[in-house]
Length: 69
Image 1 (cartoon, rainbow, N blue to C red):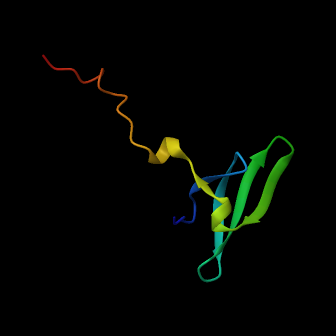
Image 2 (image 1 turned 90 degrees about the vertical axis):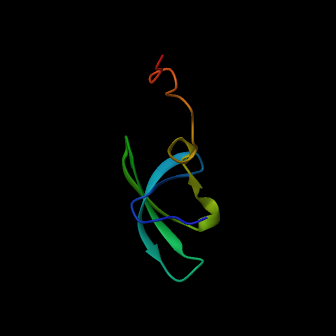
């Protein structure tokens, strides 16, 4: 699975944005998050990252909006 700069991802159930990609594959990703306590920064390997399915999984949730008779 590939990830890009600026993409939102999940790590351990928390949402982060990829702010930097370092090294040759397998790369390390620098992640940023905003929390009530302030910003959080961490590094993660590709195996630790998960895509946010709401952005990537197709859904048929608009069929009721575009009904033509």
